[in-house]
Length: 378
Image (tube, rainbow, N blue to C red; front, side, top):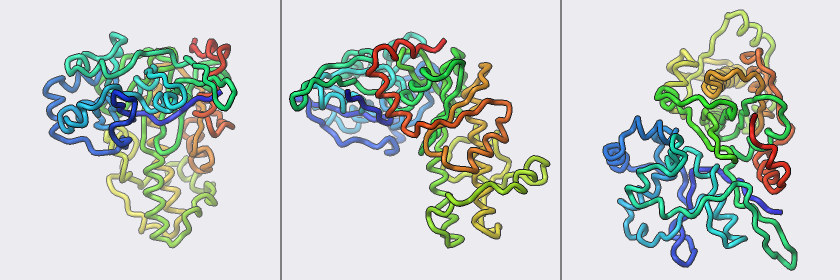
């Protein structure tokens, strides 16, 4: 079988012949301030954020991409017949089936009204809801003949939701998953707690699981920040790009941290989330040149990133009584990250995943009908 896992917040717009109309817009593409102001004026901000369970994130709210095209690229917009989420477009290439599915709709898109469990009213008001095809279950598959073989092809799934899916099968109790990489996302499918405006302002939002139920999620641009800081440190200390992988946690640093003899001196450069940064860190500036070595400066970088991660996990937990944490993705190979996380979350049962391709594995599991029936969290 074949299935597809991709990052979210990305759309493919098709013309009446089923061909792409636009480039694949990156979710970091700047969203025009004029469009943001006009959308907020027409549809409010606080109420819209709570109903769609997502703060205003510009192009990361992929639904706003259609709003932007309608008013800023009307000639292009006029050629759009159907809009697909990226996973469903990849599936469409193989199957020819034009569909939508819950996890892609629910990943901070501003498309879904989590209170009414339907597309939000602003889409209807803008005559945009009709651009999206019918919604099918994430487990929907089609039989396709490829080189004389009949192949089961799935409709695709959002990557964080795919990673989460693989843990429903192996966990015997409630858990939070920290899915790490460029974005580190803490996912909690075991709470129905309503998001507050404060939660939203701290980049805590809801996704949709494969069963259509809300998943409380807290996001951090953690991998991006680490890449930025490593480039700074390598240039400052003349170290190779991969040198950081050789650095092990200094036991004296951990002892000093436990005794309160040292504090984190780090402040991030690319994580624009004051609600999390101000809660987790006390330093308002960062000067790695005051340290005598790469190792010493790197310890403070990782200490700062882990403190941000812990705050993000607390947000995802909310009021739920979960004490099991899975961690997967790129950061599981980072010794300092793992040991410092154990230090700050020592009351939790933390398990490092041995499945580095959690999203791919979860997407593959969707093809198995029996496993899908076991994915509904208790």
